[in-house]
Image 1: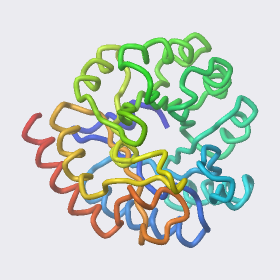
Image 2: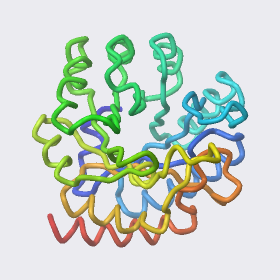
Image 3: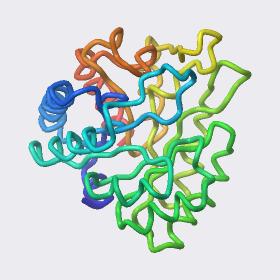
Image 4: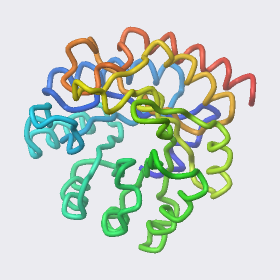
Length: 267
């Protein structure tokens, strides 16, 4: 898969799936439903699932079912539905391992300045999606992208907006950042659900505002974003990670229809 495959239609592309791979049956059911939705609407689709959650507030938070087990599930989704898949990596050593199973390596926001990690991801030949740090300006992401390009990653970089730290327990999105990052020449994605997180809660479990998912998606498409990133689950109340800000899967189809109409209007 290439970035050109994702941007070949007049629609935005979609990265969507559960926060973390919980089990094979759940991943396959979610993928099957989203494939049907996106195929009917000519939306290029990338299945998203973290094989391991390295950034957790509490020591007893769920981190995954095991690296190899989760990566094999991602590969099964990829092969069963003939779709690309994306997952996070957290260290240079993980880049080569994950690249054997997925099409897109995602750099978490907290790690977007880690030169060794960006270089290792670029050297795999996979697409690299860099999430903008909650502590960085949109303009600063130019330098993160250049690290990937310098290792032969030209044409394989995507940038993702996911909100900026606002005080201790909230995030805000400055929508000026989307057109600013687009001037670098890379596709820009809006991470809808993580932008609505309320991190660092005193209970040690991240909160969120899922009631604003539709508002955030509409705004992102209206300002010309290339792709949407949405974490979704059949029942977010029982999700093992980030359930507080995830979209219920039953609501995804209606949301796509609404933002497609906005996309058509601005095109």
